[in-house]
Image 1 (cartoon, rainbow, N blue to C red):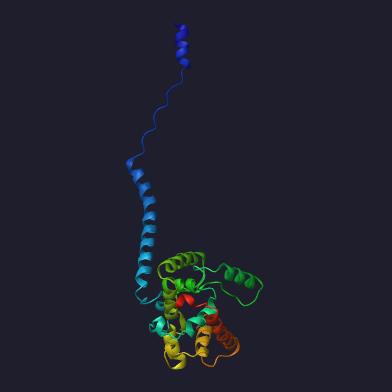
Image 2: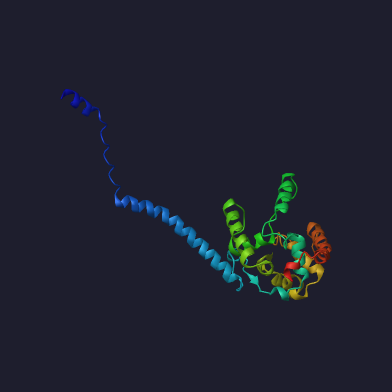
Length: 249
């Protein structure tokens, strides 16, 4: 009897089952997980929906326009009503691989990084697609957060809009002067006529103004702006000859 009792005392005791967590705790944890998920799904749906709408409807206003203390002067102009040398000038000045890349130009980005590291004039590697995404949907300035959103919207407009629509929107929302947006308003401001009557030199001057519209003038430009405009004007025939604007036809 004594031996049997000793054997019984050596048997491992069964662990008590853990008490179930209160339902309220599980609900709180589930809520904290679902809120970010709902926000993410809502953002994706809203951004995709807006891009689809702007595929057919001109963007009425942008954040940059709303924050401009000088007021807004703009006038929408269809791409086929803009002189073809204007988009060629934009390609020559801003994005020579516009028709061949899918929104991002790795070669241009690498070149810009090497150039900036050498200590010269700061140069960006953004494509026309990236600039359009920023101008239409986001705000000016840098930062990783804005760059992340810019990449997302760049992918969307490349997939939904296509090159021709991207160029059309870019030429209509890009700032071309103080309080002036789009090449139509810029052409009227600087040259006294619409963008459909631009000469090659005028288109080149507008393209030269685009990177710094508040500091550069298309009328009687001097210094760097003049040299840059002349360089763009000389490259416009190359863009046409080499078919760098074929995606716009």
